[in-house]
Amino acid sequence: MLRTVSLQTRLRQVGSWLFAAWLLLGLGLAQSSADLARQAVQDWQAGKYQVDPAQALGKPTEEAIRLLERSMAFPPVPPGLSVNLGDPLEEPTPRGTIVKFPATVSGRGGEVRVTIRDGEVTRIGFAPEGGLLPGWLKSPVTWVLFVAFSLGWLVALRSSGPVARWWAEGWAVVRQYRGLYLGTNIGLYGLFALGGLVAYANPQLVRLMQELVGGALEQIGLGSALAGGVLGLAVVIFYWNFTNGLLLTTAVPGLFLGIPALLFNALRYFVLGFALSPVALPLANYLLHLPTIVIELQAYILVTFGGLVLMLKTLRGEGYRAGLRALGLMVYLGGFFLLVGAWYEAFSILVLMRP
Image 1: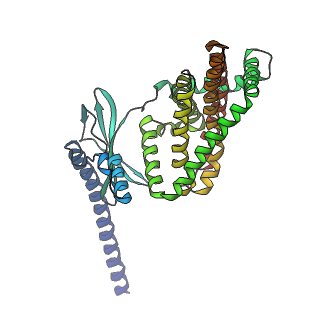
Image 2 (image 1 turned 90 degrees about the horizontal axis):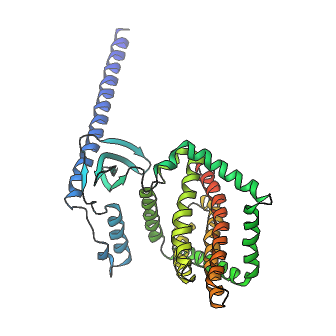
Image 3 (image 1 turned 180 degrees about the vertical axis):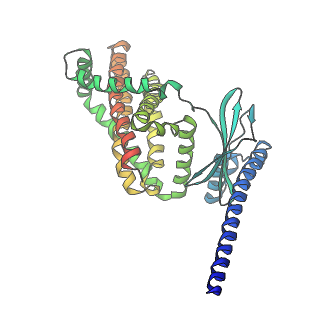
């Protein structure tokens, strides 16, 4: 009996020692992650990690990809960067531990993020607070207005007001130039499909492209929009796609007789097809995201088509003004496609594809 009690006591002591050792080890690792990140930021500011992407030119494919990956993982230090290394915040993620340090660049707040995986620094970069998106997008008032805007547009399409008339007039232009519209669809969707097929020749380069796209989205601030749920994410997606995709990079180039918009979107569709190829994505996620691709790319096709109609009307003597109206109607139709696409994309990301 005494031996049993003695054995139990010793087991408890051993268990206490193991627990203490585990606790101390955990604290030591946490401390080492912060120290490692702190030293990495100092080395980054000193230029230790900097790689010139031009070094990849002429290199074998695998070596070139490694150089490009490193150049994206460790971008140049922003001019005027000031980092507070004394107040780190650690965040565990599937890709490793992210250590964040408060920072500013030329007076704009943000944070320097250091990603550590298996005791190795794999990424460093500055992320501005709020990204490139205006702060009012995150307001609940904006979300309520966006819901009202979405429902109001749907209701107005069933009325006899100007919203419905513009809709009918826009599709009348599509029917009038149906051959040009069909050709634009075949050409741009075809380039998207071609990019997806070409990606099978080099899946590693596709993953590199996806890293680049992911980093760009993080800089924009789309990652933080996930916290707003389906509604908050839909608002951000629609805003970014409409302002930067539809207006700035398609409608504005379309004003110059359509050709610049066609050339820009030809390149965009091929690159998107390459980056979103199923070769480097789970098939289920690709299929769930496919409606988003079809709907949102159709918006840019419509406006590209509108720019080409502007060119035809101008060259045929109908006048630039008549062509400008056709382009405006295509922006209207494209905006509706982006609205539908934004709602579906937000729902698919946060609900359908949720692990």
